[in-house]
Length: 220
Image 1 (cartoon, rainbow, N blue to C red):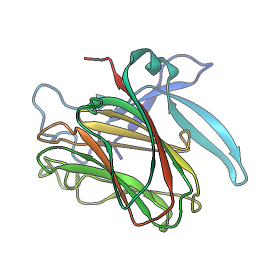
Image 2: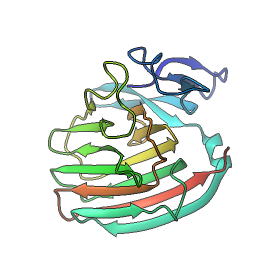
Image 3: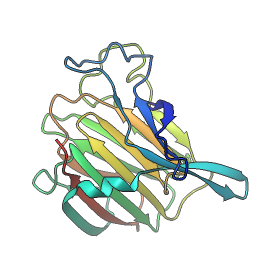
Image 4: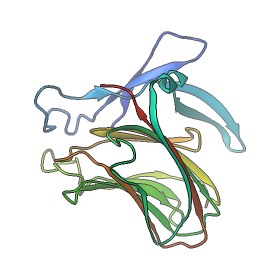
């Protein structure tokens, strides 16, 4: 929802792009002072051939790996409520996370970035409705513009998944979600009153496993 007007970065062989991270519905009303709007992470684009034709994939450029810092790895058996990352483990205001779900069933997998104020940004996979979603209605400052938090952002999926991956690029006020190696991408900005410091997962399913691999970004 918050990525548009992408432009090339000049490397015709790697086909890299970067986009404006905002939306004209509220771009001039966001609750910031020293700045207004930013850019997405640089992305490498490619075509993937499928049974139904070609799809355009977006993935973060490989140069992002140069900034890897403190890391975390774990594998869990998914329960109804799961605490995935706590404040002391890595800084979620500048992080890259790889989430790998296995043995998925019909139902909803809802991830939540949270802070101590009770604010949260939720996102995930609805494996019954066959869609990805992001909900920022409780993410902090939302009372500006007419369209910022009035609807849940959704992206359709073409099937129910038994296995799925998401790469998350997170900073203080944005999240970029790359589903299954960039076959679908969701980009959302948000304005919490305190940085999100925890990640949790809730679900109405049983029997799944989740592998988490993540690291802080060594950036200012």
